[in-house]
Amino acid sequence: MVARAFPLVLLLTAAPLRAHASPLEFTVAHSFSIDDAKSRIEMLLAYWGERYGVKHRWEGMIAVVEGRIMGVDVSAELVVEGALVRGRANDPGLLLRNAARDYISRKLRKYLHPAYVET
Image 1: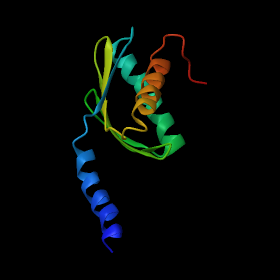
Image 2 (image 1 turned 180 degrees about the horizontal axis):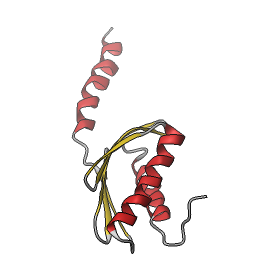
Image 3 (image 1 turned 30 degrees about the vertical axis):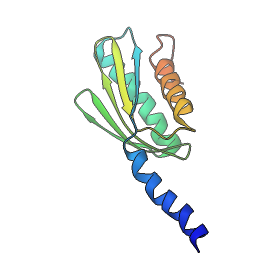
């Protein structure tokens, strides 16, 4: 009975530790007006909404994003500024941290690239 209790205690104590994880942070430069940059971020958010069912809302120039992307819970804010888009997202954990950071940064760079055109 003691052998079974140990893994259960370990699982119960591991969950709160993750709540204190630092958020993922990223910054992507752009060359658009602030309104055009916001429009391009809106295209990305529309893609995530259609593809994964992710919800978003705008609070001025801040997009608040909630949902699941590729099976991972996402809670994020994207802030559109004059020459940058800054973002913070929840940390999905050690195994997915780099993949999540790379995926979000890659999508932001794609949608903020001057040659990108939505088809």
